[in-house]
Amino acid sequence: MSDDSPVLNKWNELKALVEALELDVAKNAKGVAAAGVRVRKGLRALAAAARDLGKVTLETDKASKESKD
Image (cartoon, rainbow, N blue to C red):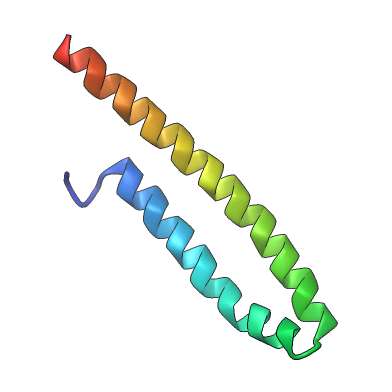
């Protein structure tokens, strides 16, 4: 699999979103309510990115299967 794979690109995007949330999660655990708002917003973005990754993997699998037939 090449480094410019759409699946790997989406996966790296997903990992970056998780890493970006870490600081706000830690702040929210210490009681900072504003950080909780940012975490929830980030989690919505994370869920959307995860759905996109699922779609990309499905498209890749379908294309791979069609090329074998």
